[in-house]
Length: 275
Image 1: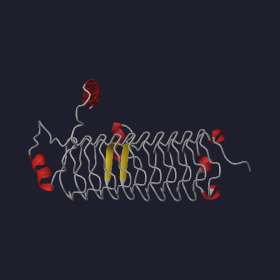
Image 2: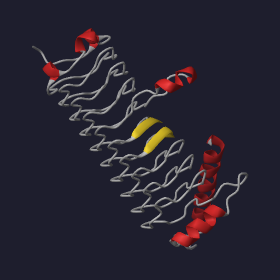
Image 3: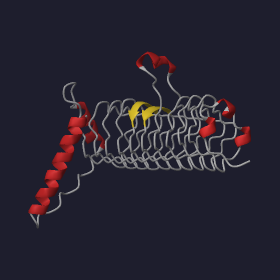
C-alpha cells in the first residue's frame, strides 16, 4: 500500500511539473459521472489477480445500495451523496475518496482504507468498521451511531459526530493476535456525542473530547493520556482502570456521577477543577 501511495504521489508531482513547464495546456477534463450499469460492469470485470479499478471515478449521487465493491481500488473516487446502504466495501482502498453526505448505513467496511477520505455528514449508522484505517479522515458531523469500530483513527476529524451506542470496545476474541482496539490518538472529537458507547480499552491519548457527550459511556481500561475532557458531560461514564495521566477535566459536567475515577491509573497527574 505504501508503495502504491508513493507511486501516486510521484505521478501527481510529475503531472504538476509538466503543467508548469507547458503553459497554455488545458486542465484535464473532470471524469464523467458513471451510471450504475457502468459501475457494475467495471466491478464484474475484476479478477482475483486484478481487482476492480474505479480510481478517480465519479459515482456521486448514485444508488449503489447492496453493491459488492470488495477489494476495489476506489482511491480519489467521488461518491458524494451516493446511497451505499448494505454495500460491501470489504478491503477496498478509499484513500482520498469523497463520500460527503453518503448513505453507508449497515455497510461492510471491514479492512477498508479510508485514509484522508472526506466523509463529512455521511451516515454510517450500523456499519461495520473492523480493522479499518481511518487516519486523518474527515468524519465531522457524520452519524456513526451503533457502528462497530475497531480501527486506526489517528488524527481523524470527528468534531460534532454522533457515536451514540457505538461499539468501539476491544475485541476479546482476538487477544492472541494482540489487543484489537479502536485508536483515536490525537483525533478531534470535540462536541461529539458518544453517549452509551462501548469504548473499553480504546486509545484516546492526546485526543480532543472537549464538550463531548460521554454520558453512560464505558471508558474503562482505556488510554486517556492527556485527553481533553474540558466541559464534556461524563455523567455515569465508567473510567475504572483507565490511564488518565495528564487528562484535563476542567469544567467537566457530571464528574461526581462518573464511575471508577477513584480506580484510575495516574489520577494524581490528571487536571481537575480546584475544589
